[in-house]
Amino acid sequence: MTDVFALPDAAWRYVRNRVARAVRPVRGRARARRRVAMTQQLTRVPARERCPVCDAPGDWSWRPVVGALLAFQWRLTSRQRAIVDVQQGHSCGSCGLNLRARGLARAILDVAGARAPLASGLASKPGLRVLEINPAGGLTPYLAAASLHVCTSYPAVDMQQLPFPDASFDMVVHSDTLEHVPDAVQGMRECLRVAGGGQVVFTTPVLPERRSKRRGRRALRSYHGGDGGRSVVFHEFGADIWRLLVAAGAVDVRLHLEDFPYVVTISCRGHLRPEGETTA
Image (cartoon, rainbow, N blue to C red; front, side, top):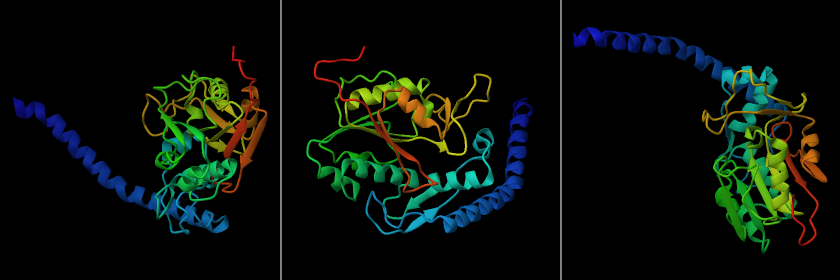
């Protein structure tokens, strides 16, 4: 009797293995084509020659990372998918960080008025206070070189209601987190509040050819990283993302396009509140 009841599980494992074996060559060919597309894209628009994180010369590797379901949900063209693949899958041979993290590091150094590599650059700025919301693409150990470095985890610490006083930090950093915040305007408003007159520097997926939109309740849920608890996507940002930042209270918005079209890094700041004035 036990063998009879075990048969369906055994049959399912057999079918699953057969399907996996049949699909494996197809997936392999698809990945090879996407790697060729990445190589062609990098030939047209090469990555920067030096890594701003470790200051090593360009010893790069790359692999496609964008899954078919995500590409379908984002309605990516083949060119857009190759660009996102480069953003997420183009890595430094020395520190291992991808192009998204390197673009963020480049912007951090820029607004801090420091030079690469990232850790020594931040260490050269006495008294610099940095808040990192979510580990920012592998930059955490480098950001820790700042005089004060606090790293929180979203959503355990709610970006829409940060537990820090006004102007607690000189710089707030987050990477590919804003799209997961239900009220993105409030999230950025909080970042600007705790930064005082300092800078908020961040990346988020931006498709410059489109306008921003909030994913509808009836839309098929989209996730980044597969963790449904924190990675559900609420927003798809486009060229008009600056509107969100102005609505949040930013008075100075800058796009860092050194790694465009692969990475759009944004920095912004709000008004420095007079001493004693608090938010409502």
